Image 1 (tube, one colour):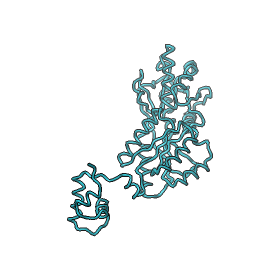
Image 2 (cartoon, rainbow, N blue to C red):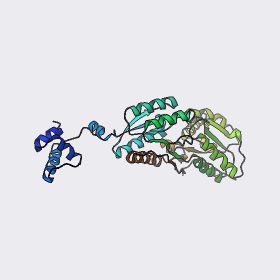
Image 3 (cartoon, helix red, strand yellow):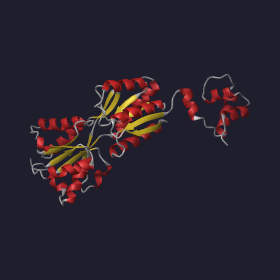
Image 4 (cartoon, rainbow, N blue to C red):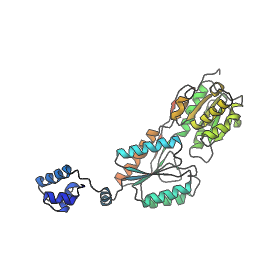
Length: 340
């Protein structure tokens, strides 16, 4: 049997409103004995308040909207899991949606989530995000009146709170690691120009070459969409470029594609050149030589994002701070020293 406040009121011999005020710890003129009696009955009957009614009375839903660009990508899958876990620790549920890397879908999902009464929005942007009418998007975000955090990106043209990884520094760390191991001809597989964070990684790579007095070679530059398939497609050109002694990839997945192509063509990719990727994918450690990679500190990024969003909800004040998470280079066995 499910007990209601009405049942507790009858058992305690008080009014329904008195029970409601006592159980919600609100001021009411009753004796301490009566207050204690009401709470004792509630505990003994395992009374559970109606969450919908509580949310309505407090003007909160305890739901947070989360929009990600591609849940099939291990990076975003891990981020989604950690966001869900951290929100749950604070008593919030996650209303999740995949935008399939579409800015139009992001706007539509944002509208629907606000209509469902979420308390705030966490948006991990699509690759199309920055190629839309920013004034129109800003207006939509402002009109929601909801706390909003942009995750894994920084939007200079938007007045929103954002939490991003230092992509420039991540690429610079990886490039310097290869240079310190004697490599001078370093190929770089960048994300497509319109991709979120791709330009910063390219600049980190190129400026680190120049800082060390090395010439940037356009024919050492390749492009992919962060997938295994795009790495596979670029593999032949990279492996057959005999000048290249090392490869820096904007994602671990593209390195997996190179390794796959090499295996199919009886080439040992690890003997052919040194490799560093991005993302610290869980599968990095099961390759022939575990991959050195740039860890984007997902847990830290999620913690900062969730913390910023919940603070806005509690304070009932929207902020536009921009937070940056520091990268970490995870050294494993895919980088070898060569003669300088």
